[in-house]
Image 1 (cartoon, rainbow, N blue to C red):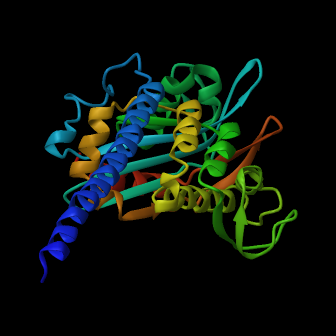
Image 2 (image 1 turned 30 degrees about the vertical axis):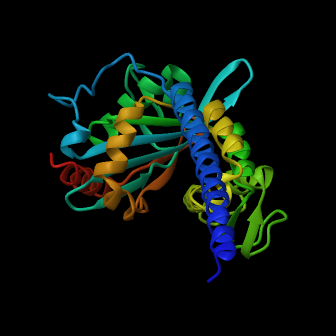
Length: 305
């Protein structure tokens, strides 16, 4: 090879290295901007509770030591001039040793004692009476387990989250009110209508719970895709404006580090043996005592209690 050709090749390498360096720097800056936005969003989402730990626990859960823990998911239907009601109530228990998560959707019309209010009423009214803390205490009393963490989602802002991930695809079990049966793609407004309908569903609140789960799983699936990296700003804005939790950033990191296997395996617990009863002209869902006892036993065992 002639010296001029060798010289030309040597001259190319600094350019190639420079281009690769610029790409690496660009990717690094982009990822750092995502990380910065993420931590800022988590700071906005974080909302401590008045109680440090559940009254049903002697010691606080230690996520760094892989203790089983529980979460209450509240989908809140907020209204102007009104605190609103919890439209959706889902309890998760997470056990890292078994590598499973149990998920229980509580029928919102469940007749139970509202802790702190001294009365029997629909469980979703607990939020209207006393917000997150009263909801947690009432669910603890019903299920006889501690609730360690809570995640509250504003259902009106729910559509912003769906739009931020460019919509979700679900498999509708039936045709109703403008929705076709089978696989359909929903934008934010459509997703909100899809999860709220229950009067046309022969399964009532239980059918609605299944549709809510479909949309939540769709959001998680779309949010985890590479395409969402482009929209991360919209996603973080939607989360920061519409989600509140008492789980700190460091605790979320512990969950990601120590519980990934459990979070990936979700076993749903179905409430199906209860019955409806009208009291003073108001319809309530009465949980079957034997089924409730079995659910309590399952959740306690999953929390190693």
